[in-house]
Image (cartoon, rainbow, N blue to C red; front, top):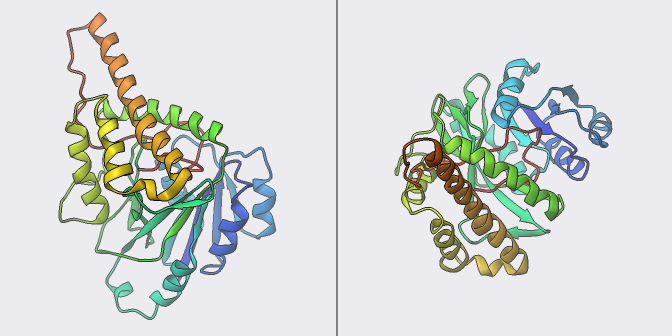
Length: 306
């Protein structure tokens, strides 16, 4: 395929070289949008002779859409990655083989599964693999949702799916990972309590992988606050066999599924208590199926995993 690769970076020296080495196997047209890194990110990018552009980070969707609108992309297809996401060998082979398949002529976008690597271990259980994302689409056909959290590209046209995964290699220290999740919990509360902007993905049981995910998340949104985080943890760690991912999986599911989701509900509870002190009483539960991402200068290095 005739592919351009777009990568978002911010202080990504730990993972960027591996990401670029894999990306070079499918494209010689690679663009990096860096959010004014203070480490060796820019130096690593220059060693790979990519197009490096500095642009201040507002939020994930704004940065993605800015890249699509302003980068000198001249290939037919765009492949979007984050600095900690590497193309697996299976995905590289699949991308090279796409030009020999029949569907590229009739398909405008491809959903790609994402595999989490946490503390060096792939997280394959607990419903965490595959996590589907629209990352490869025909030029001019894709747009990122205007959301603070859980943003996905929306493609105006027929779509299909690939089988080889993107590997999300989380290498930041746990202290920073937890700190970012604390900020992302604030963003999710804003997202849950504000009016959403278009474009958005409609939840559909028999739709795309992302539409199905949004459909089932509605059920989580209807569960009672403070209790649903525990229910989700039991579902992922025990019923969906998350315990099979060892000690690394135990840390991941306790922090990401239980602590993070409980923190979001606790902040919603706090917000409603404050609201009751100044206005008429509001119910605690906010019945939405989506969650949000921080409007700070973080790209998805170690971002919340949905």
